[in-house]
Image 1 (tube, rainbow, N blue to C red):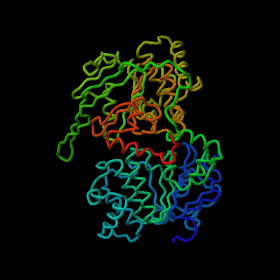
Image 2: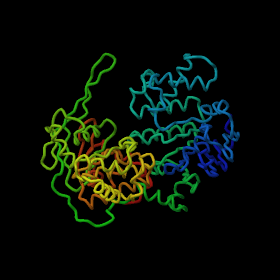
Image 3: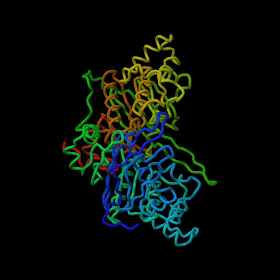
Image 4: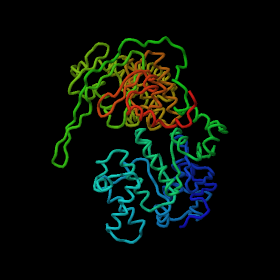
Length: 548
């Protein structure tokens, strides 16, 4: 299939439906979209907008429960609409390369990386030979093209031996194995640290320029789309509500939904979020102090033993009534530190004090009393909330455990108050987690954490998996609750754009050690360490951020 003057990908009036118990339900409603050589088009929209269904339709990967109702899909002028899977396999790889979102589920954990790239090379070559020298060299070439300088070493490694960024580059190598003319990337950096994300996107930009590749980037991160795109297409409820070049979308977005997305993007905010109502500040004396924390994990593998220094003399001072962010790349020690603060993990050395009580020396029974003052909100509410429990039971469980609401009527009244505190009405009380959106589940997780009226809440990447508009709602909710209840937050995140919105102070970590710590304004304006500077420079969306 040769590339001519036609667009590399042309979708025209495409409609896709899903079979449900009530018949056929539309998921994509008459979308038209083009990607030309050397062009990067970003497809943005919230979860459920139809982005993934559109991509599956374009790649011929729709499930049996879906159908194309109307419209066409063409690659370089060739209409492939309705082609069977066997025939579409000749298109996937040889003409279009696909980079999926999660390398942990996309890479085979029991096969070496090189073997998986060779499989793609051999399939696209269609010559039937197995692991020939030519295939090995082609696989190494793809790994190098994907930005893996030590391709020979990576070739012989298993996925679990690679970092998240290296695994994502391995997926890029597989996508490049057939020398495609267009790449479809489905949220390829959503789970990566900002610095790794920047390196991956920089590399894709280099490949696009070098090979004249077209790229369709599916993302919910409007900052990434604004920084990287030639054109942006916005989807809502299966429809294309906005399309245009970046400057056009920024300056004259015609659809209210697009304007809401732009307003919700962290990079588009000037300064911090403010509470919806004015409240007296409670910031002052230390609420939580950690000193000299150390933690070493002993690792075993292939008959050898090694040690990983997860924390090295880590220190933290959190002022009452403020938000203190802990930032750094994966492996920096953020989650280990958070786990020690709430007693999930025991340190090898050092101390943690909350309101003058030293926690690291407490026994299990003594810790029970501390739990009322110190609560934790996990990153993924779908896995942290029991799917069998109703919302009412989930929120009432800590009340029952600590004897704070002894009767059913008292618990129901308190659950209603807590739901109202997180902007959910009583109709949600009898729903299960699976019947809630991601943002609603996170609101329930926050309500559950508030049930015991804690003094300190530790939030571990609590908004990183949410769409930008839902993320904005949760961040505003946290700011409002802090102002109303005088809460103290420890906010663990890799997103410095969010830090700038909600945090008073920030601690930057790298390889288990604290690099620097201080007020957010000072750290952002004048970072003293090159590592901190690199994190700030990698914040997506700053290319078109409003002038301060």
